[in-house]
Length: 148
Image (cartoon, rainbow, N blue to C red; front, side):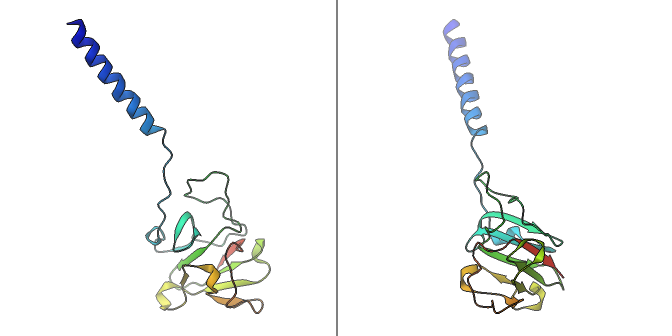
């Protein structure tokens, strides 16, 4: 009887230990374009809508922390590599400096059917605002976002 009890106890302890290991495993970032739901402007830390993720429903004078990111201590400020505007009837302008200062790139609403997202900001998508910036590399340059 003792040997059966030891076996059951050992199996239970092993299961608890294995369960504990799973509980302490860091979640992976599985960002994708479907994360950007209707009514939001979204930014991702990597090309093609992957990596760290954050979204907005209103203007934000300073890009803060990523909402979903497996890497700690990384902010969205100067970290976006792909963006999407899914706010109906509103333009979204991403600015190079905080507080909507400096030059920017504007994306129309998705419902407009054109120029509402860019999977790779280094390719120069969007409409230039405040200077001759259309077609420039915007990777890792965004510091604030205005919804208008």
